[in-house]
Structure formats: structure tokens, C-alpha cells
Length: 410
Ligand code: NAD
Image (cartoon, helix red, strand yellow):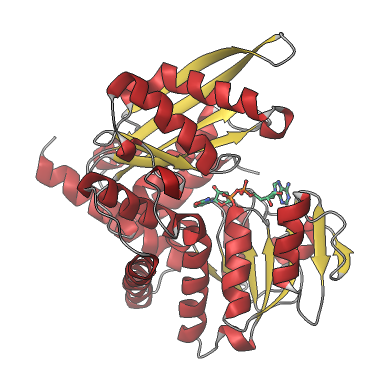
């Protein structure tokens, strides 16, 4: 299996060859502007000293300040962060936000740390990188293993150096200059585009079955949106395993369970299934919303869904992508499908910059407009050029970044 970095490079190459990009332009667009790796040393609650490695990779700023999440996960490494940073460059361009792309992460198992330790870790990380980020430079946001609370610690620490600066991160709690609807935004965007995709095939969510891998921020809000739209979510899963119910899972009950117990373990709304078998269920739509690289050369032949919506970043390896293409399984790519989060992050940043607050309705309306406009653009290019949706999305993203680069001058 290729790593995330090689996978992102391969998807880029494919679009670049359709566009006939020159080798120099390709190199320029692929090379990150800045890569930072820091050591974070801190005291644990028991008095021991622990060290962690943190990364911030700023990939491209041709279209504006760089934007990208901060991931706390034990598999975080420089290659993965760089791949995710470049995905952010294409993602912000596909949905036409005035941003570039970046990503950060700390190699840590957040569940092994106490809340106090997580807070110290976050503050220490800000101490190391605060000069490199900021509202007009690079704006972090939550990703796997981080949430609004982490962003609250982050902004508080940043402001110790730079004064009042709510726009320095997004995904903050509502009470601290966060935006209504940011928490639900990625899942909601996935739901909106799943519906838009099905519509192109003259189908609707109400007559579709859906399996969702991952029941964290993205998975839960995706499930809730689909459930409310009348879709039948027949399988869900998290790191503790999965649940299958042919009649449809009681999503509100699953949400309450996870809120109270912290995971799906012990939830009795269906039969237990493994994460691996969830991926090969016979459903209309499969939505990987957890880790990258879950659909591979080994299991892509077993997929029985007709449509895959990439809610997670990079859930399909390039080898698997080729197999799915050959089997006419339609894939809605991550850089478009999960762009709802960064879109509402942009709305949060705009509100912070203007000291003005939008209500939830306005945010939802603007999100829907941005997502469907971007989907329609990618769809029409895919149709016109007879290329997969992924290649079309990269074409839009790379094209916009390339033009900004040339217009700005080298
Ligand atoms: P999260 O930490 O809130 O949830 C992750 C979920 O995945 C949890 O339910 C966890 O139990 C599950 N999981 C972890 N390891 C697993 C495994 N081995 N098998 C099955 N499930 C596993 O993270 P999130 O914010 O929901 O992010 C999920 C994915 O979506 C990531 O790929 C992330 O990069 C991507 N994404 C998130 C956002 C956002 O706004 N949160 C935006 C764009 C993309």
C-alpha cells in the first residue's frame, strides 16, 4: 500500500497530465513552502517527562493565508502531514475559498493523556510555532483527535504572545468566537453532496441504504443528516467495531449512546460487524469517515456499494481507486466531499475579522451554496472531459492555484 504522500502525488500527477502542466510548474505546485518539525517536552501528571514530535507544514499560499487542521494521532508523521497539507491546497481551491493549504499534527495517542496533559501539550505546541501562524498567515482548525476545546486552549495561548486574535484558529467553541454550525459542517457537507450525487443518477437519499465507517465528528453528523433526510443508515462503526441492521440503525439512539459512553462499544441496535466487513456491505452508498487508506488493493474488489463518498481524507489508495473505476463504482473525492468543514471555518474567520456574527440559517444556506456550486463545477468538467470526479476536482483545484501563481508572478 502506498503512503498518503505518494497517493496524493499520484492523484496530482494524473490531473497534471490531463492539464499538460510543465515539469517546472508541477514541481513548484508540489513543493511545500515551509516544513516545521518541533520537539514538545512536557511534564505528565505523574511527574515523568514526556517528549512528542509536532509538525506544521505550509504547502501553498498562492491564493491566500494557509488553512488546515491539527491532528493528534499516534500515526502522524512528516509524510502524512505533507500529503494532508497539499490536499488542503487543492480543497480550498476546489470550493474557491481565498486560502492556501497547510496541515499540522502531533504524534500522540490523545486518549492516553489526561485533559490537563492535553492542554499542556497544546500550549507547548503553540509556544513552538506561534510566530509562523496567524490570521493572515496560517490558520489551524480541528482534525482527528482535536476539537473545539483544543482550539480554545490554542487561541488562548496564541493571544498571550499576540494579543486579541480570535481569527488565528477556527473550530473554536461558540462562547469563544466560534461559528454556529462549524461542528456539524463537514458531516452536513458530506450529506448535502451525497444527495447531490444521487440526484445525478435520478436517485434520492430517501430510497438509499448507507454504511458509514467512523462515528466521530464527521461520521455522526453525516449519519444524522442522512437519517433526517429519510435515508437508511444500515451500518456504522468506530474504533471499537461496527453495527449492522438491515432495517436501519436508530441513529438518534446511537448518537445518545456515544455521547454517554464515549464509543459504540456495547450499543445493541443491530448485529456486531467488523470495520473490514462494513466496507464490503451491499449498500447504495459507502461513506468512509475515519482513517485514510482503508480501501486498498486487497479489499477494493469486495466493495459492493455503487457510490463511495470520501468523508475521511485519503480513504482510498490509488491502486484501489483504479479497481473501483474499472468496476464503475462512482467515487466522490475527499477534496470536494469533506470541504464543508473548511468552508464553515472560512465563515468563522470572516465573522471574526468583521466582529459580526451570522446566525445558523445563514451559515447553512451559504454552506449549501458553496458545496453545490463546487459540485456542479466538478461534475460538469468530469462529464465534458470524460474523466473521473477525482481527476476533475484536482483539475479545478490545481488550475486555480496555478493561475494565481502565474498572475502573482514568480
Ligand atoms: P474524530 O476523531 O472525531 O473521529 C474519528 C472516528 O474514527 C472515531 O469514531 C473513531 O473511533 C474512528 N476510528 C478511529 N480509528 C478507527 C479504525 N481503525 N477503524 C474504524 N474507525 C476508527 O475525527 P473526525 O474529525 O470525524 O475525522 C474523520 C476523518 O474526516 C479524518 O480522515 C479527517 O481528516 C477527516 N476530516 C475531518 C474534518 C473535520 O471537520 N472534522 C474535515 C475534513 C476531513
